[in-house]
Image (cartoon, rainbow, N blue to C red; front, side, top):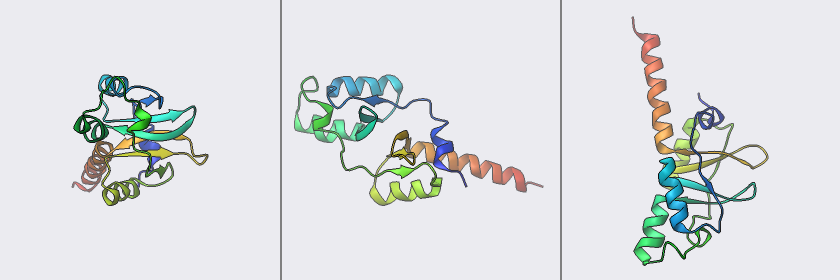
Length: 138
């Protein structure tokens, strides 16, 4: 089984943003990196996650000004996180159980090592299925 530390090591794009950034700046950084979530960092500490859903539900639907609102006021603060030693199946279960699409992954010291998306997990499952099929073809 694949451990999360091996999946986050394959990621090319982890966007981290200051809590004081504006919603526009955060959304722009996410769009430029082609990601759906950004880690909100206070120094080296993960303090929140800002997602495309947050933009829609907490900003646009409330008619807030993207140039005036700070990310810290609209980010997801109650985070569900995984540890880098957990398996991909554990991460998938957490994401399904909590209805989330992005999962921060922390090391033993509680520091962020990456943010997995549901897409990352689907790609991993497809790779594992291909490997299984290739091993059992006769």
